[in-house]
Image 1 (cartoon, rainbow, N blue to C red):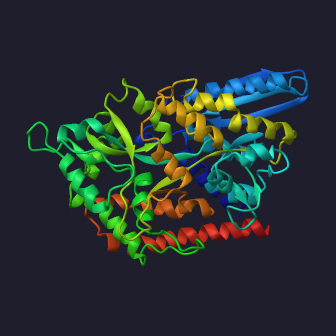
Image 2 (image 1 turned 135 degrees about the vertical axis):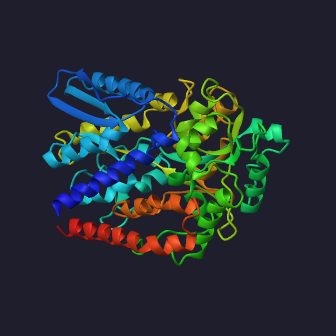
Length: 480
């Protein structure tokens, strides 16, 4: 059973690296370069406490965290002997963490995604932070990221706090204004997101054979299955699982199937997306950068890249995901986060907790990461009152390079009468293997080889088996 639990932790850690705000899967791109190999920085003090940190980060993030760690070490020089700051790649992070768990030698500070909170807590790898961090600083975090890291032994969203956020990410929707201008179309109205029918119509007008060779070379939208599918599902009132996350319902939930059919129709019926074959040859992210698609998903971490003329030499802005006919009428987007955790093995938990509080909430660090002092925004600030005031003001006056419709992002994060952001259901299950099972065969639907109904019937039992295994793992861990 222990080996199975370790395997599960690897899966959840890998998902955490995939959805973390500092980047997405390499096929979908990202806003900054990632260190190509592990690197370790060592800071010295005169005290007796050693702190070991293991994270993955983009180069710019690494530099910010390095400054904060240097500052912390200097302030606590009489308490700290050494801070070992190891930064690895996303691909290697899960492997390193699993090896550390197996050896029983966890770093003192490391990343945990919401999807892994249950398993890390149940297996005794992390410790609660409630008595170790400043309550005022915690109160000023976005409610969504606080609840994502709270766990009471049964449910996510209540109980003790186990992480402080590295970030809160949002997968919004971007559009190429230049392509709209060329087509003579009005820009999307951020106050009134498209209906499905309206979106398909606009995408058809933006899909063109520009060079007259008989082949489409500009598309209305490029889809990103891992993140770009769920806005259609949740925006239409659909679900993958039942309310208590014990049963897969995709084969019986009509709202889900309608959303899946619409998503498929964008490729097969309306022909406004690259085909699966074309997407394999050149991914949607690169097609967006090349000006070949009018709409594409935009993570908060992508903004810096999209604002860089050398990377994306087009005018662009943000808008809402299209709204399905059977939902609550709100445009819905994926929210994501990864958090700093303190190991249960840490010999100096007070110092570790104080350090992660600095990494998560230090104002100077947040100013640099969000772009006020660096001119390169990689995230929305974790500090809520700063984000809602100074950050917005700096975007509006041009100090922070950003899309003008930044309120779309805030609509998803804060919620409004037009927008809502949600964590996917993997956040509330013990691992994500049921979700991975669904994604594996999804391209077969998008090629037309399998119908939506048939695929849902075929894959639902396999997803249920994976979900049952996750529940079994959770029960075994909590009963030990």
